[in-house]
Length: 262
Image (cartoon, rainbow, N blue to C red; front, side, top):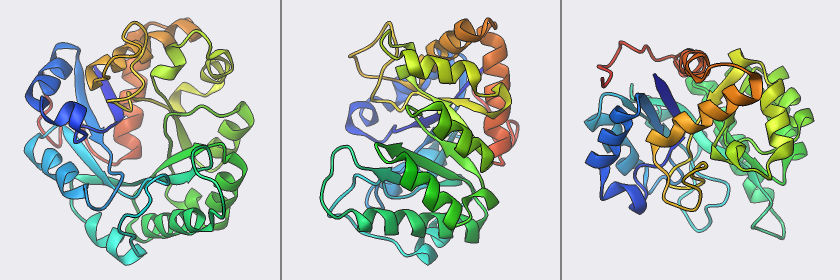
């Protein structure tokens, strides 16, 4: 049984085919998924999916890349995260890859999310790209270790992973770990303690081998588990068992709290 700890089911590539996406999860033994918010404008769509399907959870947050969107004070994030199906604050963090210039607004947005997570006592979903040092610094300064969370779709160095682990965070691997040229990331996947690891698709993006370049789906998360198992000389069933248990522990939701899909 697998859990997809990060996907975007409300994005147009998947939203129009959601029944088939959920059926495909069932066919591939993916029992639960976390549908992650990237703007407040889209949050109602994310929440509606979580309310419609017992095995789908939601988060609330604003992606660091999102420009020209509604900002949120910590109090609003705290209010929206009160819903029982909202299990995390995010996706938040820093991304210096696509954007240039003065990015202090990004850092301030990230701080507000960490403050909201602490106030609501829910974990963070952190995105970092070409911004590892500032990401870890802000996590430390704002006390992100008090709530923990996950470094999602991890592609950074072992040093960054170690710093996040020290703050009580989990490390999540996506389909990127299956790519042949992701040698450094494969090494990180060998080193991260299994009890602090999650797996995800980040669908509809980053489909794993053998579906690379196609629209990604939560049902493909098993290929991430298989690659991690290969790297660590473990059966994928063991990777699935531990990462699923990690998911329910981190996000404080019980596997039997909502009817799982079998």
